Length: 348
Image (cartoon, rainbow, N blue to C red):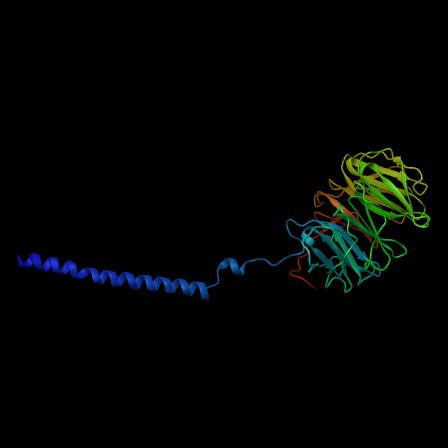
């Protein structure tokens, strides 16, 4: 009987001890959690990569070079991103912009004064080589908030074209703008200088329009095509080339008075055309490059190789090299070299 009482009393006395142990374990566990929270850096916090000029989802729709310094390059594209190189593309850095809208094009008056344009009627201007960018106001339009191309002509006038018949002109390096064309359900994709101080725009539905500045008169040109035209350019001799979707390529030998459809062996969309030393270069989708010099009777087609991006939307001539921007940025000198140099963060 006494043994039974002793056993019963021992079991009753054990409960407060277990309760105390549970409290101590809980306090210890909370202390460990506080220590981890305040003094231990989680691995994810220290392995976040900084922004880089060439990200996996980047696309650069516009590319430009400083007219007074061929080593200075800018490219603009997705998400308001602008990158800059001061060594001909050997290295690149990100420049801070105040927007996240896609930027469609960029142009430079000189090594300091730069302009970039894009979606949501965004116009950005820098007067310090892109170290800082400010938003520029443009005339309000009821429709058409996508600006597609910016162009600086030989008289330093600046032009912007875009959707819904947008044609804007600035004569003071982008400070103020005047609309030059009424709103119309028509996208203008490309712009170039023509003869007799004229401006040409390429647009949807095979539209080519000529603007005579002295008369302030727009003239529509018959192209006999209905596919959208994406770009147009003239050389100093009056030879013109306009390119567009579904492999459309038009040529002119009389400053655009007459246009002929060229025979080329590609159905791919063509986005951009440039001319240098009387040689025309055309790029677009599919990693091909079309060229034609005065010695060529037909357009020559070159494959850019395995490194080529699936699309290129802009080209510029740098010295004797061709620079291309799109799903990547590359230099073509008979062989394609893709820029992938990584310089982290904004600034130089």
